[in-house]
Image (tube, rainbow, N blue to C red; front, side, top):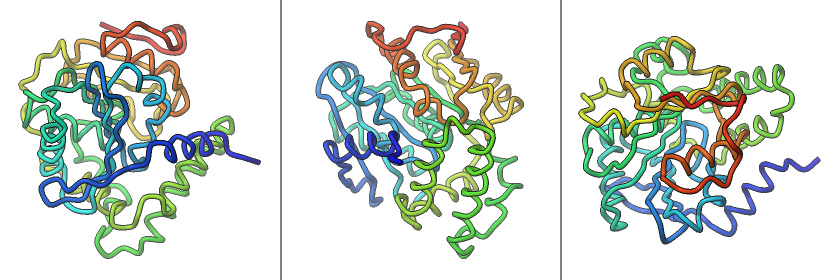
Length: 284
């Protein structure tokens, strides 16, 4: 049976292939669509390339200039934050609304802390503000330079299998993510992403206007617990907090229309996607 998510993502990627860009000596994947309207930078988590946001890019590309990235095989969140600022400068983008999910959500906080002049609005999604707790759990307890890649990938497969068993309606998502971790994300890039969490320094102070911060979280996120979500909101003090009642760790994949509405709202665009309702709450 054809996986509709993978088929749709692959069709988009064939039409809009990822390019490579050397940013401060690190080899990033960069996907750009749209050439008008407000600028939007999209940063994925550990298990996504830039095109994991394909549904949002397709819906907004006629009205928004979008840049989505895939991580390099070297560096960490400090260096990556500087790389993203370089990327925006190189594209002639003075300021962008910046959304990062999971690992990307941590990274965009570093970007806003180190380069606040480059960030119009900050959208940390399904993410954390400290990696201290994560370091005490697999796979971060392993030596991420020498641990067999098969073991690291198998750990992700176990977690994804457990999610699929309890959420059979998201079988297509699980298969898509298994494809990412099984090789679509190369071994060096996967190790680099994991080390980005394990070696992240304490997040710098974030002297950024609170009314220009919007957090995004899911009540059923299996990775970002209620305690972690509360910690993030307490530290970030967002002007707006979006809550998905369901959607797990990847609401932009499984609830794409509602996520488009969220981005339209944050970018100041007319709403064309699914209206906010019982499935999600926006709290000022």
